[in-house]
Image 1: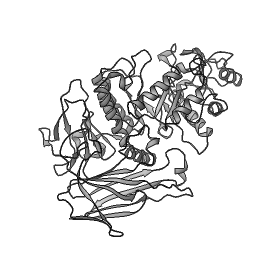
Image 2: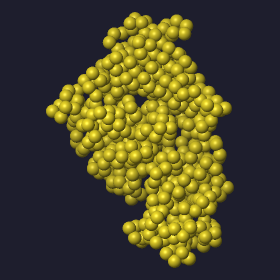
Image 3: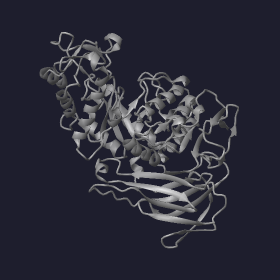
Image 4: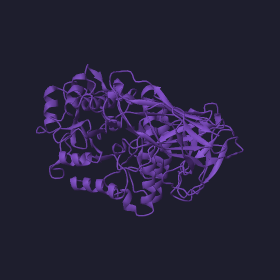
Length: 560
């Protein structure tokens, strides 16, 4: 609502020990729905507000839509009108006028390079008064949405640059707005900061610009359920940086639905809570215990997996492999998996079988592969066998009566990097030590990788990164470079491995030594998680504080 509300929400996450990275401001932050402005009564010191958020490693995101309020005293409208930057009506002579949030509005013609340049310049710190380098952008209503237009959008015979009708460029409109906004953030601090721009509209190529989300959903179980096939479809279509509003945009979720949605959302590529201004407030701590604890656990689970998720995004930036994947993507020879929409893979290693129905007491999780393929409980590390059912698939019945638990499984043959120390934001985790979870397959082998850069600048394009490959085979765990950086930029990290957790050993090692110098390491039976959510046996073999740097080559020999 205002600066005090922003500060209270920000402080609430800290006082309840919940991580968060972004505080979002919708259109009410502006002066009368004029974008690139602030309501001086509600946000009198926006730069100071952003600086206070940034001091904790967090960011802010403001909404900026393409419809421009027709007000002669509004500088964006005055400049755009004088320069002829608006889409024209069917006559080609008059600015098209439609109705949107500000009332009577006109729409910038983003098909024109000159208009895109005009728009990009508006994000400079000198033009966007009250903005800072810690402010990022959310483009909504960019299909474009026109309340009084045919099909709630722009008429097909509206005229764009080059005398092109809107019918021929409709699907490009939001794409070009998204790109111009992203370009503006890049120009704001060239090379020093990557842009972040969320868009509702998209087109082929949007994956190179920024994330999208599925739009205005509702606080209903059916909308939680349908979020999975929607996001999986987007992922295999090339738009992997996507998500759905956690908890639903419209309506008021009951605590059970909210908890289950956070547990699923923790595995969305794009993870955000977002609600209509007329719904009840839903900060996680407002629901009381045990809801607050369950949501905190889901958030911490997400944050602990960020090294793995970030590595998946690094892969996606090169190969466009989806981060969130349908089961058949990883197991293409199993025809039965083509119809599965209530489970998914996060990358190649993590299988999620969420609770998607109210009061659901059991999930019959499908475990792909043959009976010789190994799967482990993500929470305890216990081996999960399952049984072949009538439809020839292998399934395991998981008790989900407790809201604290979402069925998640780790694939045998994987090595998963984690960061387990709870922090207030992702930036605050930089430099924290890693945990490597080695989940052995039936051949007692596993492999995984880790990509790391500064997470902020574009210097990774010039070689400032490390990309490591971990392999366990023949009783030896090795860490070598997977990709050698090309370029003159250097990324330096002295981050260490804090724990190595090994699942699936058939016998305990008699000793472990570093191959390079014969140094002996100590290990013992221990817990899969640093702070377990579930109580259970301790099937993991844990090496604590081996003193190994993540960016250095090393090998550990296990003498069995």
